[in-house]
Image 1: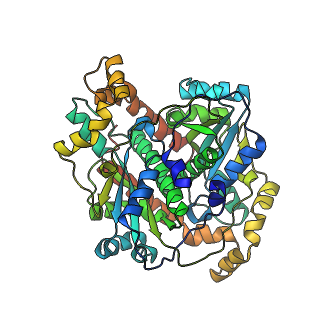
Image 2: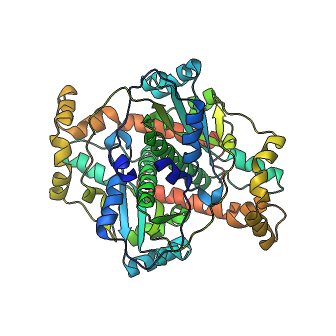
Image 3: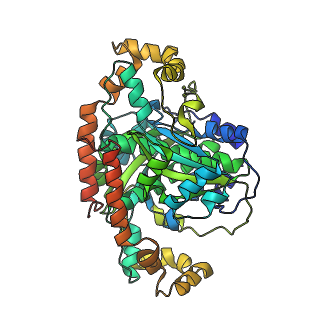
Length: 249
Length: 249
């Protein structure tokens, strides 16, 4: 049953050597592209990388995480107004999509498709891993994939046949992320309860110890997602939006 | 089979009067929240609106589209760094997430969950409609749902038991959105071929005629998604990001 598949989701980072056939790729992308899209404009493009050279070229953009060269299939999901703009111009219509709202609209379309492709791939036994690094070095990805103005990479999936069987990682209790009718505040006591399971897990405690930190939160703020990095990548990403023609207002 | 469900997706805008039970809501949200999330930070919140007053209050933010008051269930998906920031501070960690990259990271998490919730809901026979208006009047939604700094609404789903059986709308041929190894250009001839089915459809021709336009593209540029509106909403959305604390760099 589908809901069991969703509940059983695990990120897969190790893949068997077997190829993903073109027929299978088309099947998961066809299903993925049935995701809802703003005004049925389909404001996305998906770049399929299967060649060894292509994956090698992309690897540094993702800090050389091994999945990118080891997966048989890498999908870069891009917000794309270029195709729609060209179609408008061809049809005596003046596109007004060189602005931030239009970027967000295209990014939304793109991410709904990415998750639909994920669900489709997993339903056929494939495993996937999202690469959040896509928005960090977007400028380099743009050069490598030859993305024109109007196109910005948003997320990347590595896809392949699972060669590992990892334990499922934790999630906060549902009550942590759900609010009834309006946003609830979080008291210190509530936060302690909501995060206690996460903090108490063996894997997370090991993570804190290995990194010589006092708390799990410090692993995030001091090592994994640091303010100085976030600010540098923010500026680079805003520059990318300008360069790709989404900040003309 | 799951892939058939994805291929059969249709947006549902008319719902039966029947409620969606709390048990069912929790089931689809629990499955949805198994979507991949950056560093397992779960940077989202979901506001559940079921009350008549709540739906009435939100309706103008979505240009009074009837789905919002007629659906038994409205889910507003928000990018949320507030909860994570509070947890960091409580754990002697200094969060550095008041910047644009962090906003995009949270928005990505949020949209993957939204699509996972959609798939979960549809697998149980429910119908959903995305409201792209969420990013237009985000500031008003923030007031109504009492969203604190660090939280921005990204998309909305109306959910209910289908009371219509609409035809499936068109999609471009898969070849329109897929690129092998690098982005392909689109020649005039290629674009004509890729968009010919869409332009030729009876529903789209009717749409052009009803709006007194020459081409389908003009319906988008002159009526549905106009440059002046896009620019106004872009400025408002960037103001929202500033107000919600994501532009401190």
